[in-house]
Image 1 (cartoon, rainbow, N blue to C red):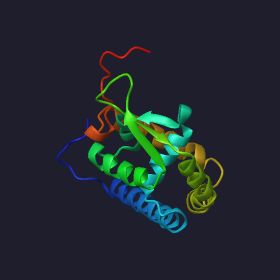
Image 2: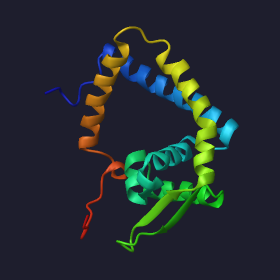
Image 3: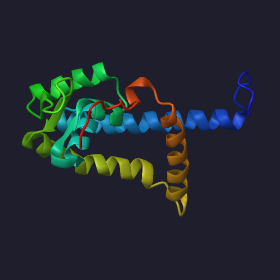
Image 4: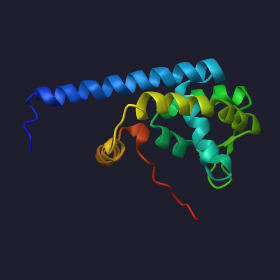
Length: 168
């Protein structure tokens, strides 16, 4: 086990800064496009995209927060903005009055369909085009391993809530 009081070595520090910079640059470019073409923040796009991909276009708010890794209060605020624009609806869960069900509307689906081509183009051009043979597989394997490790002890916003008295 490594010494928790020791700093990062030069290679670790370089990887850490490179990852943070790449992540920030990609998110900035993607968000710039989403704001210009859809008047959406990155989090709002994530919400809509996850709903479009969900069965029947609906998810419990807590499941949405866990998938997006955003605070529940922040997600509630963002969902409120999307609801005001008619891109989603929110309603009480028929199974649990404490849960809220979020459903994408046709307008929300249309907006995702409109911004998705530009979003894909930015991601492909900035992230995937510079890669060479084997990079994608290697990066995918490394990130999957790190994500699994991080999700094992997630922040509160990413922790799944135990579902009480749930019958499937």
